[in-house]
Length: 158
Ligand SMILES: Nc1ccn([C@H]2C[C@H](O)[C@@H](COP(=O)(O)OP(=O)(O)OP(=O)(O)O)O2)c(=O)n1
Picture (cartoon, rainbow, N blue to C red):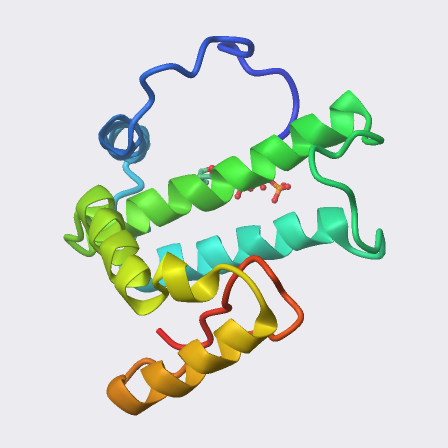
């Protein structure tokens, strides 16, 4: 989705998942595209957009937070691809009957239980300790904890 949008510059305050879900449903309904918005099609579309998002970063190497050296045009393009991913994710969740907001809040809770700040914060020694203690109690959450990342752990599981 490139180029000038009608509501460009409009404030984003108050945008919520419910609103995005309804707008996507309306968008599909108006075009009689419900027939194409099947779970599999939406998943493939989502993955395709993740690919387009990746292309923006491809070959750039690591880039600093906030992307200070990027041109506005490039940042706008990034916003468009991020939005495509979000919109397809919202639509996929809706079509699958998943309340994405509720599911995400629950997952955040699970994450905080799985990665207690008191254990994750700090040295790699503590991360290794967490790895050891959680893998013995966790049955279906296979994950690894990067020893060189002081910010936390990477979920390689579900
Ligand atoms: N069957 C479709 C096709 C598009 N869209 C919406 C959701 C996305 O936000 C956007 C995707 O549009 P494009 O497939 O045209 O993808 P891009 O905007 O990324 O364009 P391009 O692939 O040409 O860069 O439009 C949709 O809901 N259902």
